[in-house]
Image: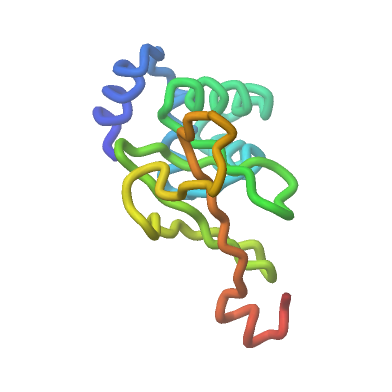
Length: 144
């Protein structure tokens, strides 16, 4: 995504375009499934002196605005973040050995792509699936 495209998305979401927000988005574009700590380490190169709390706040603002998706996975100490794209409906595969996370297209189709056997009268708005697996390298090395 180019800088004008980032600015457009921020404006469309009602957010001011700042160097900090742009740097966080740039970090997520280059490192999907990154923790706030990882984003902070990356952003500090572009915005020296930025605080971890500021990165957390920006990630929260971007998530609330629908520009970023927060991903919670088993056995991961903190939330991971990725860019949210229009009409994107995907799940994740997570290596239980090294923790690598990759996107997996929805197996069925239109969101919410999974239908519970019982909804208890609730309207389902999202289904999140995490496939737990071993990546080839961990399998070769006996990790997991």
